[in-house]
Length: 480
Image 1: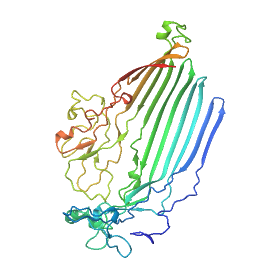
Image 2 (image 1 turned 90 degrees about the vertical axis):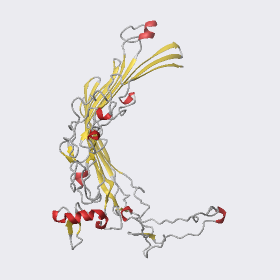
Image 3 (image 1 turned 60 degrees about the vertical axis):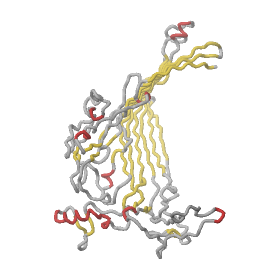
Image 4 (image 1 turned 30 degrees about the vertical axis):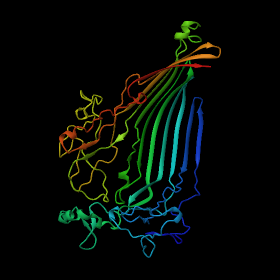
């Protein structure tokens, strides 16, 4: 519009939708120090801003303007022809301030607001490590790394109320619906909770701003052997933790209680790789001669990779209970009452004698037998008008193991012609990875509760590279 965008908030023509800063300082600094002959200290720090660009421009601007034209019912002729142009049409009548009136279910009328003082998010990263030469060919490194993403984008519902509190319909102030004296009114009110929103002709009004934060810390121990005597290898172990939180259901919840382990957090990671020239054949320690024996047995190189990690963090939920609760715009922290943290039971790999029927599998989780209408040993359902206590990502699913090996050699047939033999073997030791357990406890009936903690049928890894069925490939190739 000529005068700028209009609605509940007005953006003057030529003004920015939000104030961003362009004069940013992104320093990077590093240090490598050689205090002793066999010791190197390395450390560094970096700060990097993330450009917002147009990611937070919402086209609705808390309103939309649309109309439609159509042929009369029963008239089979085209509405118009292109060479005749589009028929005249009009938009709905606007209000005096230029905004568009909304007709429909108020709860479904949503909008977005961008904080005018929103600032660019930035990432800080820092590290400190010590490298030590153990001997001529061996290196030991210890390293700490940390990072933080600050002022991440997030949103909360501005059109909300504190838990169990509404404007007092009989006077001033607020009414506490948790007070037993207000039980009768609360039960009546539940049939039309929309009237208690601050703007009751709107549904969610999402306030976009700097509402997120992420932090990561890790310590790594690494051993490396450089190539000597036909062998090179590297192995490292990392212990880490990643926490994040970037969205709140409403402004009345404590932001810190919404922050938890990231979905991709992995506490423990161990990785080992090895390249080895088997000391048999021409130019090597044993059978160092040409001939048929060398062509058949000599010159093999072996590569081995192994990786084992903690399972990703998961939560839990419960269904099948007919309880009453406050509407979604009164946010809560969880949907179960936590009794103890779930964890994998001992010998969780044993799925029982009927693994192809999910409800007959042994549960992987140590939560005992469920009781319909109550819960299990780890958690129960939330009674009516009660907050949950479970939080997010409280425990880890099963570990993941991936191992692969390959052996190869080349035989010279002529000066410029070679035959290559290669064997690839994925998951050679048959370390299988099951799928994630079912973390939803269905309380509809006893049969449904038995699926909690089971992996399902066919949910195991299907590729040999990720811990599925072992797979061998033999390749013969001519190279010239």
